[in-house]
Image (cartoon, rainbow, N blue to C red; front, top):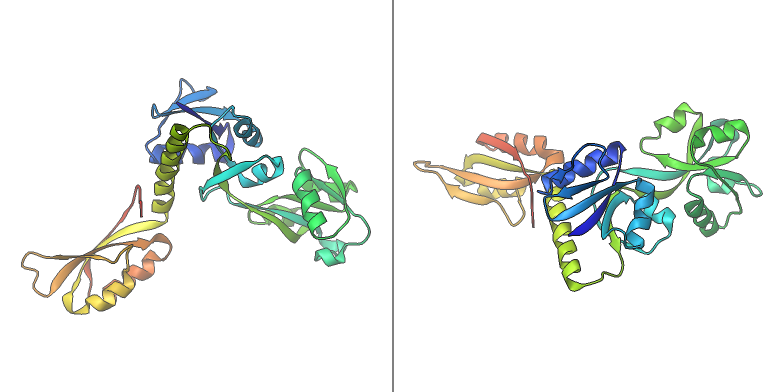
Length: 286
């Protein structure tokens, strides 16, 4: 039974549980505060701080883990991102006071002080940009640092940028794009372990891919199938089914992107489509 390290609290914890449940790996624990849980009887989950997960996986205490890529990059451990899980999206950014006159890295003078909870990422970023800085490591409340005179800049996480604006800060540069990832060590102990991890990747990937798609069924005029195929290309083309006593109509089934499904339905209707049905997809393997 392989061990998977999961965040023990917050939004990442709930998103991980939802993903695993959808993949058929139900989280079964004795209580919400339990430190371990069974995952569908196939894996064991251990719940730890998100920032500690890279260390647990790199040191072999866990065979795989789910955490933010920003935390993996900051850890500087040799780990492999096996799958982008498409949630927990955020950015690590450089920000400065709006009235400070710093709009880009070219505006930096001397060796400004940078407050951050990401000292390793910050050091690498400014070194690559050829800018000298003084790193001020802090554990939280990074946004207040420029206003207290602790630092001239900050490097911190943001998703929409609204928190920065509320605190009188503006983005100067992006250090890293981050999202939740399934991570493993770069060297897997055995072939059987590798096969099991590959199966886990496929199971989770099928859920991630399915979340961005919808299954569309509709009756459309046979004479307009060429146009229908352009609207519903599907994975390998739409499935066409003759209707009993359908005459000039046929049934079309296909997978379509969820983000533009409203346009797809409108286009089908204009072609004479009827009986249109859209459903969610639990899993999808191409």
